[in-house]
Length: 522
Ligand SMILES: Cc1cc2nc3c(=O)[nH]c(=O)nc-3n(C[C@H](O)[C@H](O)[C@H](O)COP(=O)(O)OP(=O)(O)OC[C@H]3O[C@@H](n4cnc5c(N)ncnc54)[C@H](O)[C@@H]3O)c2cc1C
Image 1: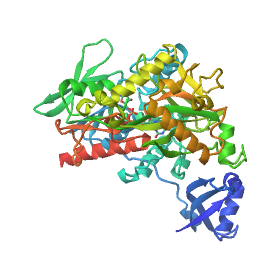
Image 2: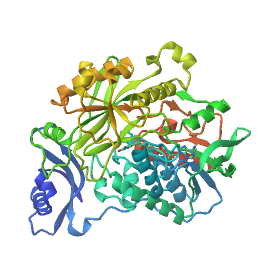
Image 3: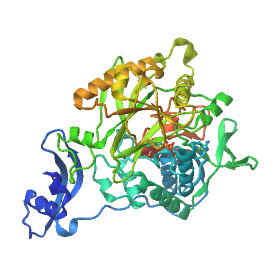
């Protein structure tokens, strides 16, 4: 089986008969040859006017076009060893699947509801502007990634087998095309079914779920974690014990950080990023990225990825959602947070993206960071979210401003139509956001407009605040054993512990933590 590179036009790529003919011709095979050419990887390249799909193609005998095999193959467990996994986000779920592969029983403890029920709380949040602190856009089965764009790319390929994670998604119902794409995405409409299917696999192979179960403390004896204390609704707290605990509670579980503070367990402040979500008409982004071609049935809604330096800060686009909507992602009362998601078809008329500015301890006034307080950046994040809640009229409304008005430092007398799942309220973000964020965003937008001419337009709107880009706190762990330095048997894991950012890297970290626990048994 030989591998060759072939470029296809978007039309050749998308029309099956044209694709087959073009592949055979460019692979040097005659149409009636017994050979076959199969695309194993593709990247859409729209940097030049001549837009092409760069394809990696396997060429070989006709019967060798094997379809990719499924994901994990869990073994029947011999439950002599048991691991508690706190949090059913990507980190927790992939740790559980890995546990089953290694014959260890996973017990998943999740504060939120099964994905089928979680959607009602999310609908209530949009409709009634009421945040359920255990069931929202971030909390509940599947974690923060369930209602997302489902982008599946990561920069952390060194951290594990990305393809294995993708194969697991495919084995549970994702489109096999995600195995080919440089920039694969699933879409929120598909993700919830996939998460439910992963649950069925875990339960069928002997894993256990506890929903509506919030972990409020750890059981610790002589420096070793023995289990967790769980609160479920109004019933009295109960305990669950195990050989190890994987703590994969995500970056919004502030109660977990406070638990560490209460006990005096080590935590560290961690740089994160904060900014706004910018929304454009998708058609405009298509025009810019596709060199004036606008809509084409052979091209997907266009995406972008931008990064620059401004005044000593990194400014970057984050979680760009072509054809997406903006969602209210707060996890408690009196917070205003935005994030983005899209369906598999990415068919809303809007393109949105977080535009975030890096924030470190040095950005805070000295009085706000005594002795590198691990909570200094978390407090800063919370203050901005509360201020934005106030600016939204003390309700879950998004404070918004047209991009041109932000740059001109004037309030917007009218706002553009928005795909925000809630109400938007005109607010002077140039006055409300921290000055260094305003200055960095201003320079950043001007630079982005040089790279993507037309990015600054009267049709673009900023919504606040994009503050949950990553965790502002790290739960430390030993580099080799991956256990907390003071708490043996505790594996801080995923985005909330500060070791991942995004669905795939969180999944990889879940697998790593479970492998580290398994190694400790040998
Ligand atoms: C709207 C939105 C869109 C996103 N889009 C993308 C995207 O397209 N691509 C991408 O790669 N990333 C995206 N992300 C980010 C991605 O979802 C996260 O990086 C990823 O989910 C982190 O995984 P995790 O398992 O570490 O934590 P989480 O997914 O946050 O999961 C943590 C879980 O722990 C549970 N939990 C918290 N506290 C407790 C407790 N005390 N007891 C029991 N359970 C608890 C929570 O309910 C939650 O289910 C998006 C996030 C959001 C909010």
